[in-house]
Image 1: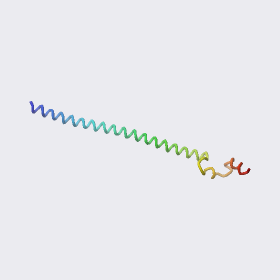
Image 2: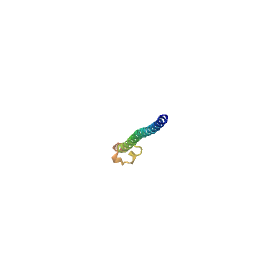
Image 3: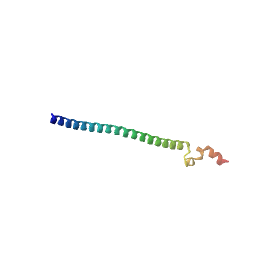
Image 4: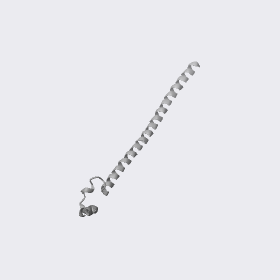
Length: 88
């Protein structure tokens, strides 16, 4: 009886250790994947937002002629306010 009990206890302990290790590894893998995906999503969204904002601001500035140096490249006929100034 003692031998059977001892062997059964050791087998159960070994099985429990293996199962616990597998469960922990699986949970860690899943949680790590979820955290990585969430962080990557946030970083990508932030970068996309910043880049989109910069591109939109630049394009808007170019269209409106407010970006430094853009207005001066237009002919006077496209800048009536300069024509008024230049003609006195």
